Image (cartoon, rainbow, N blue to C red; front, side, top):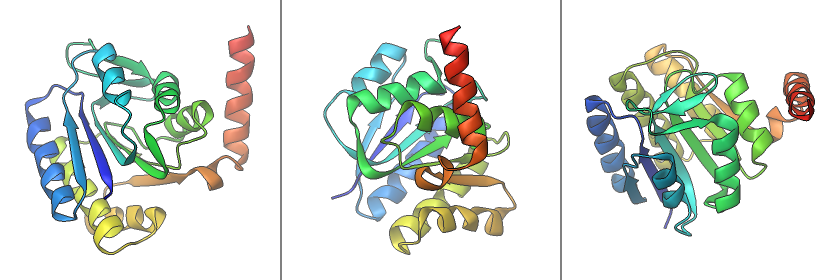
Length: 196
């Protein structure tokens, strides 16, 4: 049975409705749902260390190009640190889709940081713009419907979001992304700054 991890790491009141809907939809498709609401970086990491391997990881949080966190700032991760934790905890199956339900989670730099820090991440999906919970909800509903019910490729499933809503989402495929010039330049720049 496929498994999805829901991480409610935002703290907004709307988050409960968004994640409850995603949880119901996942159950409808026969996914085993693991639903957590960590309040600190330590608690979030402990969830990932439980030894369960997921097909999907759904992260609901506040986000920007640098990282993500919650309302109280008791969760505060850079994308690089989060990628490192995903890798070291070995919580993802080979074709795991990481769904970033946070503003600007679909920016190239976010995907580059995650892929660079964790070669085990296969797909990353997120919005290119700032969105509210009801936009995230409908967008990820469309994505899950196309992935699990219609068995569409993740890239094509993500394209369906824009066709249905005019909301800009993107799916990054590791195998395609790591060969692109922008990714190579980004990782070289990151490696040089970490040496200094």
